[in-house]
Length: 160
Image 1: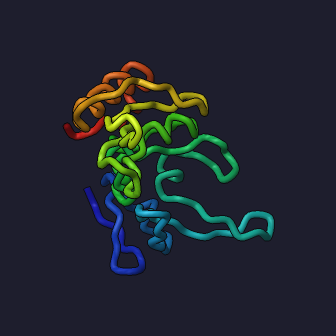
Image 2: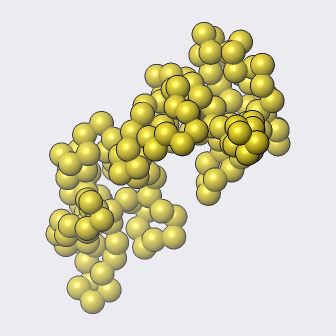
């Protein structure tokens, strides 16, 4: 493991085998929502293009519609074992829970009218109701079970 210095006091970690090739460029720290990423700028056909370090490591050219997922959600951990090529849908399946919801758990929300916790999961743009529960953790477990079934290795489960 080696570190590549970025702007804004950040650094990215990469495999030793990628270090020399990547360290030839000036990399910037870019925050997207709550995640930091290592990026650089270059010009292609006279147009400035932003290249993510994780995409360069995985061999994805600008314009390639595929994405690179950071398994551990750390956008600066660019070890090959932490990266995997995925679709947009798979990338969303591995998102952390939103911070502005009624629950700390992914796929769980408080239903005021029923006075119960409800679990739901989204697949192909549609929400699927998983049930109502007396406890928030029961609802989280129901979500986790269905997420593993539907999303496999991309399932982002709750820490229950």
